[in-house]
Length: 175
Image 1 (cartoon, one colour):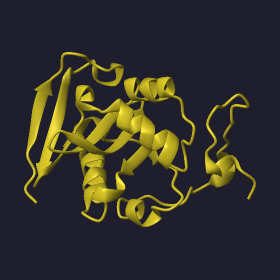
Image 2 (cartoon, rainbow, N blue to C red):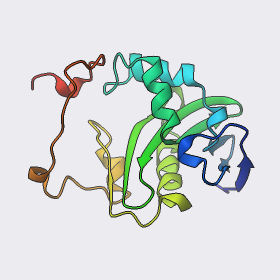
Image 3 (tube, rainbow, N blue to C red):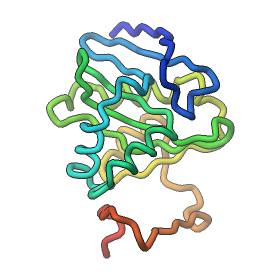
Image 4 (cartoon, rainbow, N blue to C red):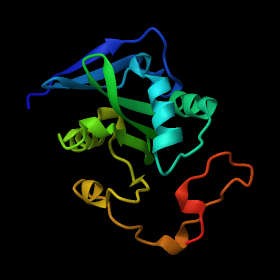
């Protein structure tokens, strides 16, 4: 369970990280977590989100690419193979939204989601925010370990679905 953090120089900077131009990697056994966007397997991410997730069914590849370009992304790897993913949408001052979190089914049950959340919450660029948010249908127990609670004042929150949205996530379907 020993973790190692190292900075990696990037040849292609994502907008979210272009101010620093460095990325981090954490190692635990045969797995690693990295914020280096050049390691991301966009084909795998797109396939999982658009075909296997309940929240992004039908998401177009160009939408996945843009979401990665404009987020701080965390990939989980076993060797060179990507086995998980999460991205953070943030202003890096007051707010962070955790999105598109997944671990491939064959790698679940090994604590990777917990380790991923520990890594995200402790990341130096993600500190001091007024609010973190996320949406989940089935992982409340995981996120509660990290202090997430139901919306304190849900009556103050609103959302706007795009009527032209190409995705068909399950939460827009009638209950």
